[in-house]
Length: 331
Ligand code: PEP
Ligand code: MN
Image 1 (cartoon, rainbow, N blue to C red):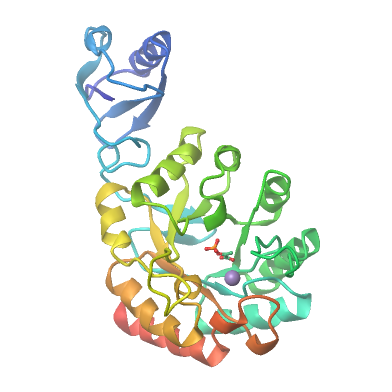
Image 2 (tube, helix red, strand yellow; image 1 turned 90 degrees about the vertical axis):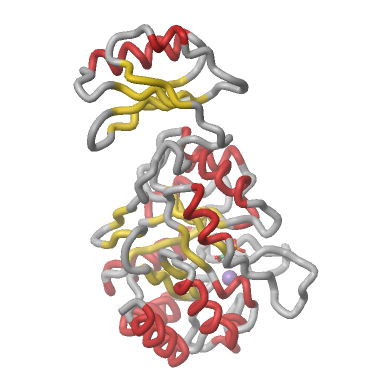
């Protein structure tokens, strides 16, 4: 439920509402708007009795929210959420391009690729230091050494850094080095990790699990927001279907669907969806055409020798071509 305050409601009246909501056993989250403040009630399992709230000073009305997620719902936040990281804005404007290798393999590798993607026009460098691999015998990432390399990439290129935290043992470290904390598809349902990310001051890039509905993705975003971090960027990266021509099936319909239900920005990762580098450019075109707020793309200067996901990593020339096409689409 949303408690909408009158235009001239005072801060003390808003605080009184929050106290009463807490007396009722829930939490009240104030959401200041251009005209008036609304207080969102969270923590209720069923319908809320609004009679105790409607009689309080400064209250205009209450609105029942029909979605199970509230803080990340269009019903409560009609305006697109714009997330500012460094000097870039994600959501509601020009698509933001995040590019780089699947994993940080060495300083030389990371800096080489970072300089190439920067030249192509990327604003954010991607690269995993902690890798969630299907096989325990595959390369698991360089850990903190990888994070230090990412810090060097930022220092030398000015690119912002997005990198993944895979569990509660490394999120504190990732948070220290990254500009955006990535939570991967496998961890979309890791609720303790989501809650911990909700305590961070850094934006979170939350990837859709390969078996999650849109509502489940938004409920995971709600976990992060309910702990106080509203800076969540969603990412569609392909879901598992009966179709086996690609690694996953890119669900482009998720973009307009999420835009209808939530104000959060949504970007697309065509690389993990396709699994094949030659499909990445056409899927990216589609993503931008349906309104994605950005792309997360794997690029490698020597993909045949990449320690992970070389098959789906673009050659630098292909990344240049992708950027040319994207720029002509958004003109
Ligand atoms: C990644 O982006 O490096 C990654 C592991 O992707 P996903 O979580 O979507 O599989
Ligand atoms: Mn990868």
